[in-house]
Length: 99
Image (cartoon, rainbow, N blue to C red; front, top):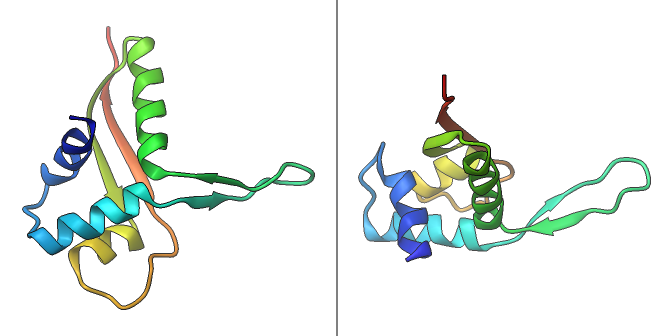
C-alpha cells in the first residue's frame, strides 16, 4: 500500500520501534506551511504528498529514485521522543540519472 511504501523508504537507514513509526506517520500525514514570497499565498501541504509528487515527476523523466531520507528536526523528533513539534525537515531524494 502507499502507506507502507512511505514508511519503507525511511526504514532503510534505521530500525524504528512502533512509537517511532507512529511519530513518522504523524509527520508525513500532517500539514506544513510553505510560505510564499511577495504576493504568493502560504500553502498547506502534506509531506507525504510532496514525496509522491517529486518521486512521480522524477520517474516520469526516467530518473530512478533509490531512496528518500528525512533529515532535520523532524528526523530527530521521530527517533527521540521530544516534547516539541519539529520546526523544519529536509527531504533528500537519492537518485540514479540514466546515462
